[in-house]
Amino acid sequence: MRRVLLLVSVGLTGASNLTAQARCDPAFQAAADTVRRMVAGLELDGAGLMIRVKGRSVCDAYVGAFGPETMFPVVSGAKWISAATILTLVDDGKLRLDDSVSRWLPYFKGDKKSITVRQLLSHTSGLTGHVACMFQPQLPMDECARQIADAKLVAKPGTKFVYGGAAYTVAGRVAEVAAGMSWAQIFATRLARPLGLEHTGYGVIPNPMLSEGDVYSSAADYLTFLQMIVDRGMHGGQRILSEAAVEEMMRDQTTGVTGRMTPRGDRSYGLGCWRDLIDSSTGRALLVTSPGAGGFVPWVAPTQGMIGVLAVADKIDRVWPTALAVLELARKGAATLDSATTAR
Image (cartoon, rainbow, N blue to C red; front, side, top):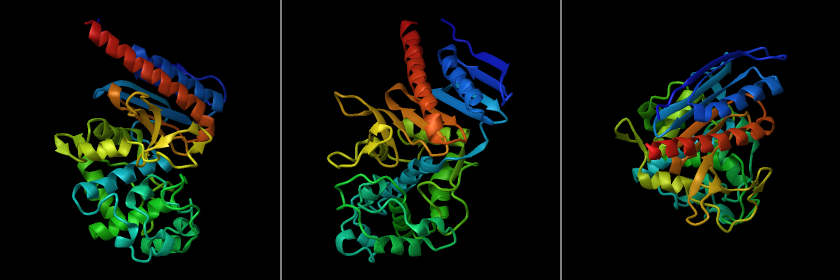
């Protein structure tokens, strides 16, 4: 059966009165329609949806002036990118996930001495979620890490899931010491340039927030990053991450800890990403996400070879019901494509 793409251009009714365009495989048109209805219903300025299955574009849908290169604040979507950047250093043997932070930052002492890099990236370090210095972009990252080291632990390391950003600032400083360069240089040389990310960055500041803040990306750039993940670390014939690193990123790093209950349910966490749907027989993640508070929702469905980005600039609590619907429709669409391919 020959597949066709539908090109739709419609005027939205209501206060937004925006134009929507979708170039989607029929199996994914419902997902694009759902995004269009969300923009109208929430009276947003626009949105973008990009989905690929096994390297093929199956849906590009945009509402309003938004497009593939429109830059969005990814907020917590930064955690996935930051964790991957640090894992490139692990691949090269410059540091290890189970290194104690104190090996690299001697001012982590006492009850914080045993905190590991793995715990920092999985929110199980026992550090508090946020510290005021994280919001001081011109402060040296080392100084912020020292202030975090002086803050009281909220739990014994490795016992509780505490979602936040302080641990990622510490992980960033560990990476700077291990690599002998600033975070901006680490990200540029190890991820941005190899992947060709032209619309993604942390800002040229000494104390970037690796976990959220002003980190920005475009749907197209983030999709390129996700394609590398679903391709098990490869991009354009070049290895960016080892297969082992990609696997570790999506493995449950929160087994046995308390505090995993979130407003969106009890979800396990890997390194920089949520494990939203799990194969009960194998424990492997079927759906991995890293949604940001600003409405930017990226995902990977590894077994389906599917990746996607819902790019919105709005509060995640308002966007999340639509995101869930889009994720489910996308999974069904990928299953439909797979069935059609098998039948041929």
